[in-house]
Length: 473
Image (cartoon, rainbow, N blue to C red; front, side):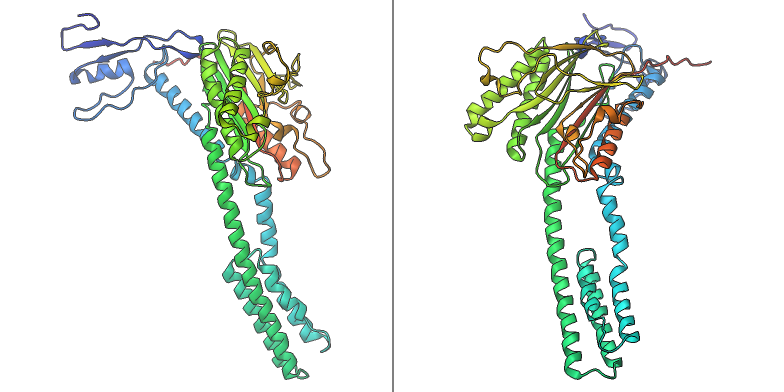
């Protein structure tokens, strides 16, 4: 019978070949099933332990031609760890990796400095009452202590500071031989009212912070769902991506990125939709969905850009909203052709120019040879032809950085823009992950943590040559 061999309890089943991305011809996918008595042979052939009877087999391992046994398992585990590392880095983009360098850590330092201040204020007020003339009292400090505690302490902590302050006032009035009863009651009552007000202020601040945190968490979760983490290795290239939300508000931004393995090579896009909020997210979903479909079907990068343009116009006609009538999307599309890993093809539709970082430390912007309008604005130029596609060399060791205007328009306190070409000149980065980590830290340092715009980043590099593994017997 075709596709099977009978005899000795062995059975071989051949499955049809499946299309392979990046223009590679796939190896035949064959699975050999052997009886339980040949478990040792099974391990030598497939590099996996035999599945005990009565247990369901696990998912098939993605095999690479020529990689079996120990080498295949090690490389597969390395790839899985790299992918998980990418997810952790992406999930941590609002967390420890950046916050340890900037805004949240600064708040923690300020809080540590403020914590002892209310107690110190009460003690200073007590000292003033004890060592100065009766006409000079520390009543102002007694009232100010709970107000200082309200923004930084918990509700219980604020209440305790208030009680400490009221108790100290009452004690000082008892020890003051020249005090009058009515003045003592008035001063103690004033401190108690201010302390009660501090507790109310604390509750309102905590409620507003919880609301803002909830809104920001929802915004970040929605953005993370729209922009998943790409695999760290695609078509023989190392890829990394980051998204960092603006620190000033909790709106969902319109920055986007995507990468796709195709029969024509590796294709990437980084873009920025005008506006923010749910309207921007809808446009992001349209652009990314159209990109993934067009990248698989269109033979040229300019045709992919035309499909994105058509998708935005089609959605605008369907929505009939002012947002789509006035919306546009800047985008930089990149292709590394199959079989030509040393070449970059770029179509730029009104987007900040990508940055090329050479192995020798030099940097340069890849400015388009012909200016083009953003996606969604082609109607302003009737009869416009296909987009101009620029080609640049991409030797091994060179890295390409794609970004949105959250990077190029980041400003410091004096209004100076961040200049990535100067910031990264003369520096070497081991891989795209290291490069993007450095980008985020440098921008965080430049802006002081107060970024006003979202930032999407993507970097790609040709994977270094892997030395063949030789086992000693």
